[in-house]
Image (cartoon, rainbow, N blue to C red; front, side, top):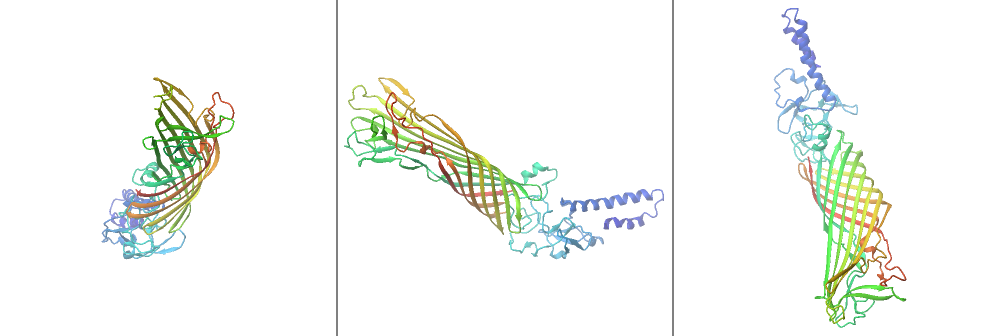
Length: 537
């Protein structure tokens, strides 16, 4: 309005013009003076302030400069003039805030986009600088601590003065001139990359490979229950060791008020591949134990892979375990104060758990066995499982930040469908006199249990996470995080082998259908402890 009052002053200068052109000149002067001032005030009230509204190097020699508002000192020592219509302003809560003298007012804190409409130092309703907290010079002196000078030229400081949220925000939708809403999502995005160490629940298996001291009778070598038998593999957990993986988190706010945000996360615990090999060079007696139910009374028995004077051979066991997941989450802020923020989480969640167990043996007959000398027998059994969870996740995420330190915690429950699939396959190849014969039956995987199995079940997947971050320089944070995830009713490969290893070798098959098809499921957990870096645009 002060600009509009200058029309009276300017009208004195045109008093000598002809009366026919005076109305036109007065109209042009009024448009030139009033329209920019009104536009600037409208922009300030709308919360979309622009850097062009400030004069970075203002000469206060003009007698009208004192009416424009208190001078604002930037971190670089320059002076900026805040446009004001009166000597006091009204805050968003309706209370009157006194104008701070120019020597004590700092520039409005803003992000790297040059926007300060969300700064606590700047009131977009009044269009002038107000101070709600205590500042000393150009640094913050409240409990956040001083992490550097405030001002639009410091990308490391936001409205809090030191530390931004999980996703940095431009306080308006336009991060730069000409940027639209989609571009603003990109320019305000934060990227967190971590390399966690994962440890998962291993698969339990019965005894798979046995041996015995040299000199043991062939009818008893390697049989379970014999005092001379030693278990080389099985009867415990497999694939339960640490494994390095990766976790990537992308987050960006939706809108200028920071109430909503979108977060995408992908994690991969890596493929844990384990191979176990046993050779008759190291163990003269090698056996694969089972319980033979082809007779009237079940008896302990073995497939002798290697025995001194009769045969040589080897046994290999290979296990694989792959776990990964992703989720797309909408965050809605439900509480916020100077130090704490709580968000409600809702979105899509996916977890995939795949395992396999393969047991292979190869035997070459070396003894004087009529019709079999020089023949080879290769037997393999494979058990594979797939578990895919797809559901909706609900939870809470809270963050607590003080100065350059931040603590985040998250709890979520995923509700949805778990699809489980089990595949069992066996094969035996016998090579005799140069010809090979292959059948689709192994030792533990036979035609009695090799039918594919698939079903769907409803599960609830809990997840807990905690992350500690420290800003090591503006825009870059160092993170240490722990995460726990549990998926119930998971089918693991090792659990699909019958504990008693009952095998019916009769051909044609008579009696009990052993090994019978079994399906077992249990709770599957995975933990991670990771180190990472977050880059905030």
